[in-house]
Image 1 (cartoon, rainbow, N blue to C red):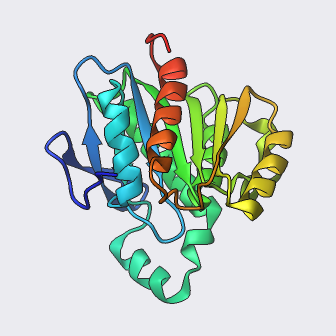
Image 2: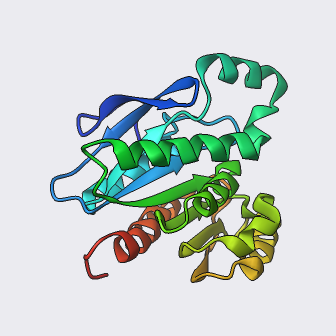
Length: 226
């Protein structure tokens, strides 16, 4: 994995205003992009997550635009480091994603692009809930080692095609994803990567996640044949 902790030359810093807060994000738009993927981090992560940055790079190489952004302000992140309560505030995270989705619809560089959500950990539940609040706007969802089960009964309302990716050795999360899969009423798929643990740190595991995500988003956000 060749992820970096900073902003690449393919991206630029943007300010995303949502209600009374302004959040920072890294926006990357390759030439000819038809779709954009909004990343939903969870469990204390941020837009500098090396795993999500690696996935975003692979998506951009496949012609997809990406927006990695912090869902919490600096003050909220500091408080969450002490209490760990906001990372599990799924409703707050979902509302921030809805605001970011609306921002994409209004920004001149992204308003014509099809929108997808990529969620990891608790961010997966937030991505699913946010999609139900903007039906017909979010066209695809991918969860990486996520907790879609935390979306609860809202799962049956999700209309966007949803791919759940779980490590084969992440046994408890496999069960939770299977339960969530059963509740989804949209086009859906569960991919289990053999030998991978929760963070997909094993050789080749994250690369497989990125390729699966790219194929899913290309299928539903672009005219590219996969």
